[in-house]
Structures are given as C-alpha cells and as structure tokens.
Length: 544
Image 1: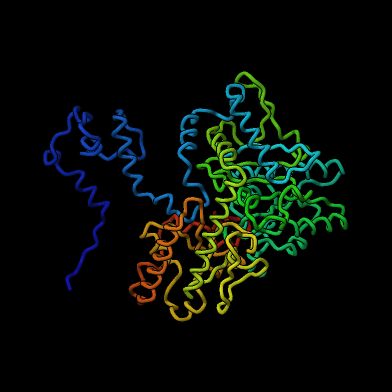
Image 2 (image 1 turned 180 degrees about the vertical axis):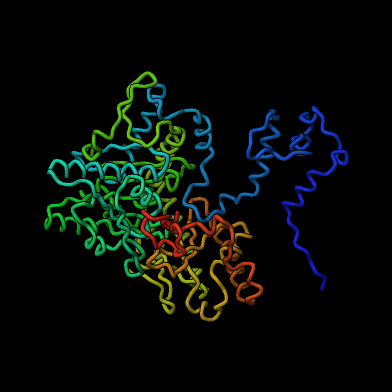
C-alpha cells in the first residue's frame, strides 16, 4: 500500500494565492466591470472580504450572488427538525411582512395603526389564555420568548422586593424556582438579574419535568416565583401547573407567603389552547389565580418568522409601575416595558394576520395535524424495536413510559384521548438494540442523518438524567406526511447501516471533536463535568 502524506489545505491555498501574478493574468481597474457576477475581481482573483471592510465598493448583484452562494452551505430550513421556529409562512403573510419591514414598533406616534393591531394581538392572546372578567390584562410584543421571560421574572422580583420592604424585611436574597429542564432563557434571567436560581432535578418519575414535591421542599419566604414550563424543550411534556398552583396555595395558607407563577409557554402558548386534549383538561393559564403572567413565541407555533414573542400579565396591577417608562419621543407619548427600544413591527402584523385569517378552527386544524403526525412517527419508531420514545403524546391519557411488549394505543384521530404535550418526538435507541449492538453510539444516527440534510439533534437529558441521550424531532406545520414517510425510510436505512457496520467502519460517525467550541460548550469554567457547577461558577447546560 502506498504511503500518503497529510495535506494542509490552508497552507496549500496560501501558497497558490501567492503564485506569480503573470501566471494568472494582470488585474486592472477594469476588474470590477463584469458580464456576470462571476466575472468580477472577487470571483476571479480575490476572495470576498471576511474580516475587514474593503476599501472599494463592489456591484450589488456580485455581492448578493457571492453571499447567496456561501449560504448554500447552510442546512435546509424545512429539514431542520431540531427547531421549534417557523420556517414557513403563507404567501400573503410574507407579502405583508415585506411591505412593512421598515416599520419600527417603537414609533407609536408615526405608526398608530401598527400599534392598534399590536394592542389587538395582546387582547386576543389574553382571552385565548383565560383572561378573567374584572381584570385588565396588559402585555407587549417582544423580540422572542427570552425577552418575555425576563420581563415576567423581573416583574415578579420587583413585586417581591416591594412587599418585603413594606414589611420591613430583608429583600437582598431573592430566589426563583425552575426545573433542570428549563430552557436557557430562564437561567439567563436568574444570572443577569441577580436572583438565586433553584434548579430542581427532574426524573423519569416526574416525566422529565418539574416535580411539585421538589418545589414544596425548596420554596421559602425569599422565593419571588416559580417558572413553570408548559412544553418542555427536551421532551415536549407539560409541567403540572395546576398541581403546583394547589401546592403553593397550601404553602401560603401555612406560611402566609404568596408565591406567584409565571408560565413559560414559549411553544405551547399557541398549541395548548387549540388541542382537543386540553378541552376540560388540566388548567395552565389565567384560569388559575396564582398564574400572574404568561409568555409565548409568535415565531414558533404562532406561525411567524423569527423575531416575535409575547408577554401578557393577567392584570395591570401585576406589572409594577416603576418598571414602566413613559417616553416622550418621536412626537408622542408612549408607555414602554421592554428590554430594548427599536423592534421590528412587521412580525406583529403577520401575527395579527394569522389570528384573523386562521381563527380558532384554523389553528386547531394545524395543531391537531402536527400532533397526529407526531403520534404516527412515535408509533412507527417504536414498532421497529430499535427505538423507544421518551415523549408520551402517543400514549393513552394517564399512561407514561415505554413498554416493549405493549401494543400501541389507537385512540382516534383527535388528541382528546392522548397525553397532552407538544408535537415533539423524543426517542432513543432501545435497551434491546443497545444490548445487541453495543458498539453503536446514538450520536452516529444524528450524524448520518445530517448527511441526508436532516438536522436531528442528539443530546443528554437534564443533569439528573444525564446518562440518557435522546434524539428529538419537532413536528411543525410544514412537516407533511410525505416528509414523514421519507424521514422514516431514512432513519431505517441509517439504522440498518449502523447495524451492519463494525467498530472500525463506525469510527468516522461516532462522537468526537477537538474544536475549541466543542471543548468549551456546555461546560462549567475549568470543569470537565457537564452542567455540574452552579450557575454562578460557569456555563450551565441547557437545550433550545
């Protein structure tokens, strides 16, 4: 066998770039003239600038084409099955967005109709989330659920401080409770706004979400509130808002401490109100007096392109006055409670379009279709015997966990007879598969599917369950039956390839990385154990 020498492509390119100019032809000032975008200086003798601004300008069509070509290296949005974020909007919605891209939501006096539609959206969402008679709901659009969560948490912190100071008590040690399955935005709130994060362990027993008993053990007089997640990003499960609310009622009766709930419904805010499974089922919204605020993402199941979130309070009394700024700017007076000033207004208009265009029945059809497709994918994966689902939306209501010998539950076309949750399929290699093929690592499934252009992440469950890795598929509106058909075929093909491969064959697909980014991602400072350090001492592991 012939010996092969390693070639450093960077050094090779560097050498060739510095070869004699005469061998490539002289570059003149006419180089920016072009017949097509590919006949310019950038395409012929120079790279497009990456880190410094060029001295001279270049034709717009040239720069557009080169940037567009480089973006071809990205994944295809519709095959990004890792993301909850919308990758499809109707033609009319896109047109409405393009026509209003220049409108700034901060310019209330200049765009009064835009602001009126913003107010209508807040009112529609408040009613959708169970606003009660006699209360005046108030809310705002944000750039996403992260900002909305921070606003909800900040309002809880300020109300807690006001109560403590009015009672002559210390207000210097606030804490907030959340599960270890919390999305990173919730942890960011605690770190950025100097609140102790009490991140409670989750387990298979608690269905991988916040356990009310753990909340009971950790709540005290310094607890500003509890972040309760309706729609966990890990497995799609809903946290038991009503059960936690009842437990906090009992705690208040015994201690006198009133602990509010903020519901993070980043995805479920546009799922739970429409799914048949919620009809007459668990309460999670303003129907529960202890729920003071709710956030959701318009750019997830609100069906808007990225850049829109919502924060709504059940009554204006729960939004402390000193957090609201009155702005005398741009010709008018505006009340503002956001973390930034200028914000895109086009997304708000598209949200209003969706709410009016689709109506309750339209949203319900989209949500029910997504849940039905998620149930189908779950059943097919488990039927192979190679995989078992950690998510439970395909199981009979009240039944949780995988049972290898149990036939799949067939409960009808609607979600009414199934467990509530997001249209998410979280799955892993079955115990039987791992026993028979111990050399196959689950990450190889994700890596090989990436070669077919699917983005399906493989990641560990929260720290207390860190030994369990799962693959996750998010079912969005645009995931039609044809795509599920193809996905199932490709998962089966990849799995069979792995089964037929030996350890050496799999070396290129198994997890490994020496990149600086991978070495530092999800690790505490100077710590080799993922997510094991308190937030104050380093990066905390989370998932989006």
